Length: 96
Picture 1 (tube, rainbow, N blue to C red):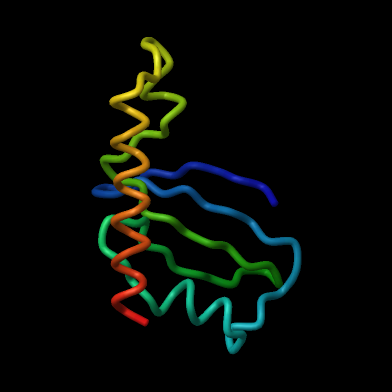
Picture 2 (cartoon, rainbow, N blue to C red):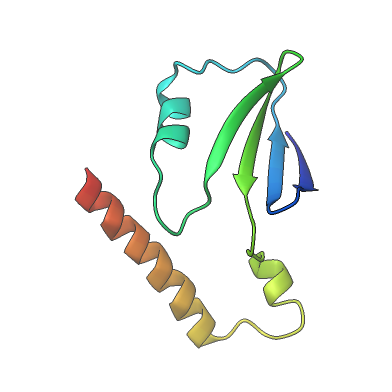
């Protein structure tokens, strides 16, 4: 899968290019596009020239590798990341 970054007037996107046509009726695709979870990246799927593209809105986001390029990833940072993952997991449990 190929990744590319694009910017338009108001948004930045991470675009993943799929290698074959996508089945938009599949369970996985419907879960990915249909379930918006706060604090996680929004995504949409588009088809173009027989290939599918997955757009993730990364506006105002930074990757962890970029964020910690200049400083060390400490215990407090790890706690923050794990607390966020745990919060998302608990939120998902309440949805189901």
